[in-house]
Length: 272
Image (cartoon, rainbow, N blue to C red):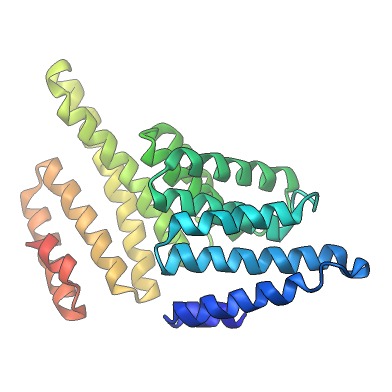
């Protein structure tokens, strides 16, 4: 737990040191048969924490992977739906994703989703997050239809739940799928009848705007202005592609004002 605290307050070096000490302590319980299953979970948890910190905080994704693989090996035949096993698979998928290997990321997140569906009693946020991660893998593999299907499953879970960063992320990702479809149609419009291409572009863009605006509502409820900048940028892009220059300009002006207020340099540059 101390490792998690230091990770969240921005002290990855201290977090890593604590996680490594936890791993050393957990290994010392290996030969106590009465604590066999719990010892394996403790050992795996320590290895997961080391892998998390290396990948998420230190950007050492390659170095994180062996620790996460070892966590799964340590767990051995621990039950499929075990929370520690699920956490190891999710983090292994994320490490591969950050490493730029969406195929391996997809493999681990697909296994994670399959296990969650088999168990059937995991928490809704855990399941929604797994679908979001799987959708991100599909997106990076260029499989937009599959990405949308995963995001939609995650959205079904979080749609009526309280605002959260996960809810924002799924709504925003789902909107991006519609935007990408519209851009693909626009780039190949010469092969379409003009009326057909215009219809599908406008339909996808309106759906994209709809989900980006829902995402905007969520981040305003969360009082997360940096996320609000991202949502406004997406809405402005869609309006511009739609040909609604006035609405696009108005959106980007709002985005620029907000980015200046919160000191978001990337947001200011994108708004210009």
